[in-house]
Length: 141
Image (cartoon, rainbow, N blue to C red; front, side, top):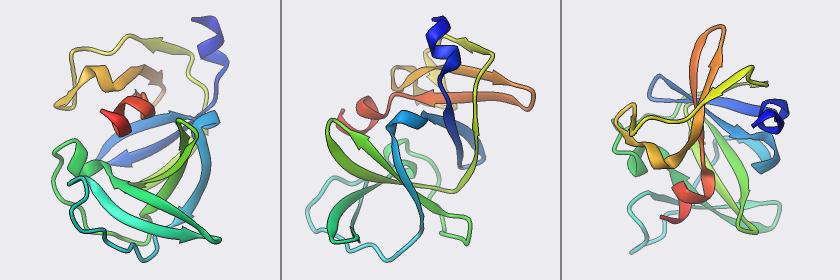
């Protein structure tokens, strides 16, 4: 697991909880923009955006994880990830920083009320714990 400790992660917040994604999974971080809704889509799909001529689906992790509904603010961002060779945006409350973890523990069965199988692990920092998402599992299961 030593190679995992050299990886960099982008940390962000959802409903006052801290989460992270491997920086290698992140394509781009953009400000919130108008999202076109798609009828009859997955309940957690917010809609699609046009990112420089490419149509990108945008997922709402608040809905996916059953978190309280969220009102967009100036700090809301769309993190565009490359998952299974597809570009997908995820709405986050706020992007914090890029970090490396000195210690990563296996995830418990539940993390903040969310199924532990969605997580790669729990990263330990000076400010507390950060849940590291398995983005492919979150978006496709």
